[in-house]
Image (tube, rainbow, N blue to C red; front, side, top):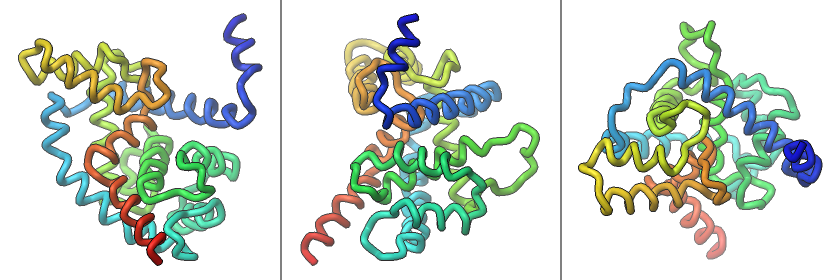
Length: 231
């Protein structure tokens, strides 16, 4: 009963995001049933340079759909982007994704937010019966990188419930190191960087935003903001 009351008290703006999060968690659970090829947290770190390079190549795609060249993609531009990439989502789904990823509340997504949105789209478009399909969204090279990010989350989510807990983060770090206070501090620091809403659980969207910071993608956004201000 408490859960029903809590849901009724949710602000209207949060209801679509909760609905979207439920879809993301379910999609992640389906993906987690297939396991992961990643064996350690260190192996994730070693992939940082390659992932960084791949995601930065997406800047041209971002600029292509930033039709007014103002440094952000607004709702209409996102709809045009989905149409061009043949991503068949309903208007409600596109709107929910936009609201979930526009964390700066600027009515437009910066590059790092656009990357997160595309990776969420990649996860949500997974089809167990369509594994033979080469591309889910018209960006095959980028999709390979997104699969690596999904794989990394699957490695961290030891109990496969669609979230990463503090305990699971510590376990993942300890599998790589000899344990002890140092590894515990590293695990806690990484977890705090991911757990934006401080609820003790990290969802895939939070993980992605943290990852863009770890590899420096969000620094590009700051540089773009500075250029815009100087102009």
